[in-house]
Length: 128
Image 1 (tube, rainbow, N blue to C red):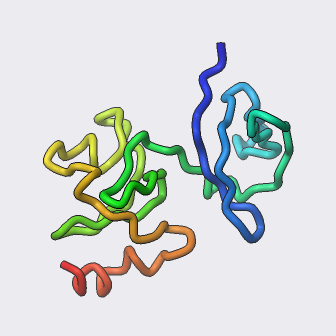
Image 2 (cartoon, rainbow, N blue to C red):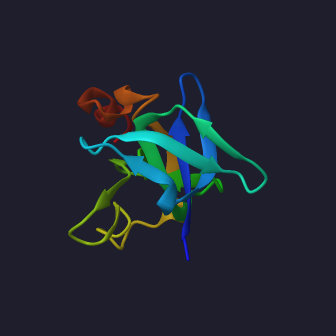
């Protein structure tokens, strides 16, 4: 049985949101994803994506009902966080790492690929 995982990834000029079956990721000897088969339940299509942009939906939504993905930047009333997997706690930072942070109190304000400036210290100080 394959587990379906909701992901997003960036193609040359747009984001795609699909369900991915783990068995369809093909790795080269350098462990880089080459051909990723994306399933949309009606058609199977192959798309050329930027592998570094692949991010899993973490199963939580922000205060506006927007799905939160790996690579998103979320803000609380005090801080800005990059959402990423943390092996030490087997969960998505900051939510699994700090139980006081609830997704329903956060707001997705961008992502690290389209908005890298959101992680700059000068920006963090402005909203903090």
